[in-house]
Amino acid sequence: MKQLIFAALCLIFTNVRAQELPMENGKVVYEQIDSIPGSSKAEIFEKAKSWIINSYPSREKNIIRSSKDSGIMVSYGMTPFNIMHGTAGVYESFKSYYLIQVDCKDGKSRIRFYDIYIRTGYYTSKPIETWKVQGLGIDIGRKEQYRKVHIEVNNLMVINMASFKNAITPKSSASF
Figure 1 (tube, rainbow, N blue to C red):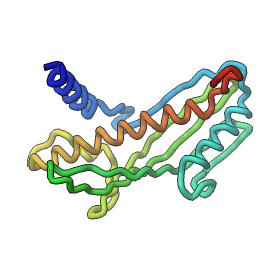
Figure 2: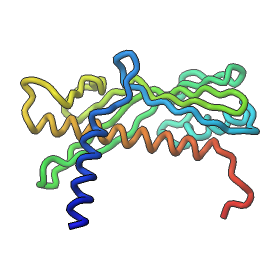
Figure 3: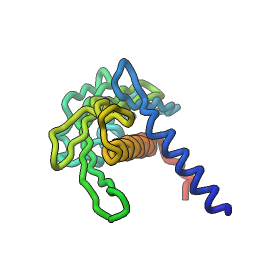
Figure 4: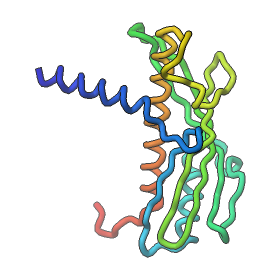
């Protein structure tokens, strides 16, 4: 019985989360501000640059703009993911493309993921905002696929933000 209740709660949580993409002026934007006491703008900037280089293919070619003086860096990002259709175990491959902006100042950083586009093997890239969960004239299978895309992109961005925070946060000498 407990397992059934847990599964139902997970399903409810997943459905709610899928519909709540963070919006800013009609666009999906993920943003995180981190406090890093005792770290200079230059230290945070270098750690952020290392994180981008180590986290994304093509390394430094992805960085569009980088100014240590202003503490601003903009880069391309891409993350592949798969979504299963129905219960048959058939997966469809997707890629999410986005821009990453890192703003650094003494003791603080902000990372933003925006201009998020989704590409499938069958279609050209489409902004995530056009992958509607609710819509007229869309068959049930497509609605479910859109919902899964929203969930997966949300999960990827949350993971990216956690990874970034881990990379820029100083490690304690007492850590194990």
